[in-house]
Amino acid sequence: MKPILICLLAAGTAVVPPAQAAPGGSAERVRAAGAAAVKEPRREDYRGAIQSYAYAEGAIYRLVAAPGHVTAIALEPGEALLAVAAGDTARWTVGDTVSGAGEQQRIHIMIKPLAPSLATNLIITTDRRVYHLALTSTAATAMAAIRWTYPDDALLAIKRAASAMREQTAGRSGVDPSAFNFGYRISGDRARWRPLRAFDDGRQTFIEFPPSLAQGEAPPLFVTGDSGSPELVNYRVSGRYYVVDRLFDRAQLRHGTKRQTVVHIIRAGDAR
Image (cartoon, rainbow, N blue to C red):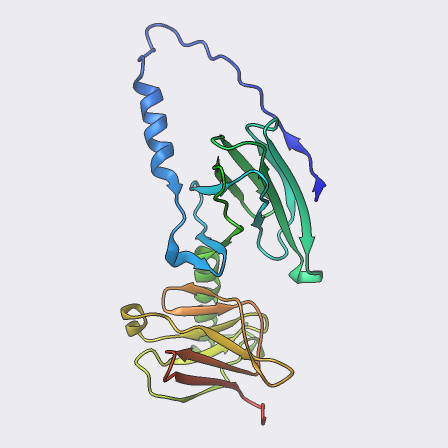
């Protein structure tokens, strides 16, 4: 784990004129606002050992760590790290590493406390956004890793694709029809969550579900790999859409254990 530049911010003393001072009032409001902004880990948001938070500007994300354990903070693929600022650099070790390459290169911030019962904050700035974290250390319990989904970004991409589709339907000029591919076939079981359609913009694939998706457990998405076997793929859920940051020829949605419900999504032109 290589060290990275940590910004240590010295606390200054603000002088407030007596006429403006309200002992306890401002501090209490700051404390209450900060507590309300903290997002705690939730069991339903875990993917394996990774806690997945939905990113929202101004939120503070809880990270629980322990001495002798390293907790990884995964940024979005392609996101460039600018700086990391920690409140306590004497008792917390912070470093970074990289996984993947090209557009899928991903930066991971590594966090390790030197003792239990510590608390501090961490601010990560990137070329896309700012992350605020509340770090807490325990004697033995530690999160393996955290990452984020980006529902606002996914929704914006969906709205852009939908707007372009409407323009194509209306026959407006200036829209390249080849930029959006709606040539996907949906087949398989008639589940209540069966997708209405799938389409892509040449970079991302969007799967639209009926409103009934919100009434039950969402089915995981598997993409058929080069070997012909289904492989679990990363995706984001935005409203009634799955957003996949890649293209695929064949995919499956599966639900259930002993008796599975399976729906196939096949891109036009794939004859396998």
